[in-house]
Amino acid sequence: MSSGGSSSGDIFDVKKLRRLIELMNEHDLGEVDLRDGDVRVRLRKKGEVAAVEARPAMAAPAPVAAAPAAPTAAAAAAPKEDNLIVIKSPMVGTFFAASSPENPPFAKVGDRIGPESTVCIIEAMKVFNEIPAECSGQIAAVLVKNGDPVEYGQPLFKVDPK
Amino acid sequence: MLDPLDTSRIIAETGVNHVEYRPTVGSTNDVARELAATMPRDSLLLVIADEQTAGRGRGANRWWTGPGALAFSLLVDTASRPVAKEHSGMIALAAAMAVVETIDTRLEHHPVGLHWPNDVFVGDRKIAGVLVETLADGRHVVGIGCNVNNTVEHAPEELAAIVTTLRDLTTLEHDRTGVLVDLIGHFERRLDQLGTAPLELGQECDRRCLQHGRTLTIEIGGMRTTGVCAGIAEDGSLLLDTAEGPRRFYSGVLIKQLPKF
Image (cartoon, rainbow over all chains, first blue to last red; front, side, top):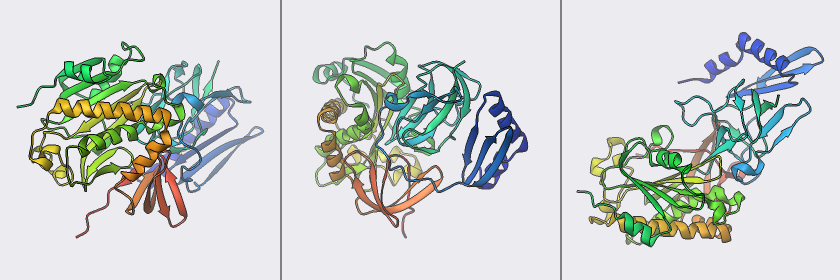
């Protein structure tokens, strides 16, 4: 059983941080924001310097913003300034990276995906919605963690369309 | 002995147009998913098994089916009914309400109702559960487990005190095909309601919610919130009156309260 302590040990692993910075450079990402329990790491580029910020995450807001919608309604993938496509959550719910704890994640960094690829499951009111990518490319970043609450329109993945 | 299911009666008396019967299956939801590619979008597929060895439900919430239970899945396209996309998330509630209605007519003087968002209880004991998977193409696999002619005598020890069955409550064997035909009929009517009057469905769910006034703790993403249940909102969300004010929840796991001694 994982504890908060071991989780925060993982997130501060220097090798992992270095790998994250490499990925940011590879994919020209301006910012990476990760949460693990009550610990949050945000890496943000300022010119050529990567700033590392770690602080307790804010209390997650209650999912009150919007009613859950159908999976295809708002998983709209919009190109961003950095030419990466962002796959957003079409509903309020809980993010699941895999179909079950025993199975590998649907999409991890480096995976190639097509419009009909399922990238994750979002559960709302005990409806487990398979979320299609609705875009093509390579997963550049996974922005949420298995079991995280997600809001309507929250970015879930960044996809390099090249 | 198990009463055999009459599949031709199911097809004659419901909107189901294809029945896939398996004596034993891992999960009827998995079979429905496998068959989905071969099914026309507007068909209503029923997958039913006498025994389910790996019923869905996350972690320890896997569904128990003893001999005589109903374990089945329906593959349904709500878009062809038509249900607005923003209301299709209430489909698990629609299915749970269909179970409530089916059980209600077979029990007298028992409080049958919902535990948000997907369980059917008689008093403090669970009699049925619903789990829906929405495929990437928008179709839904609606999995339902309902305790009919099985008995808690055969249930695992940890469940025997918290589940019940129609047979145990009535001391009668029930016609499983009849229960299934009623349940599918109620579900189809609830789907129609979801298309034409979704808020009314939410209101009816609220009236059948057995958790009103109970102190509930819900966990999502490692954060727990406790509040007094104010029922189910018109959009199907759970309403809790918390110390910080009223909140509504679309997701989360209700933490089971330890029994008081």
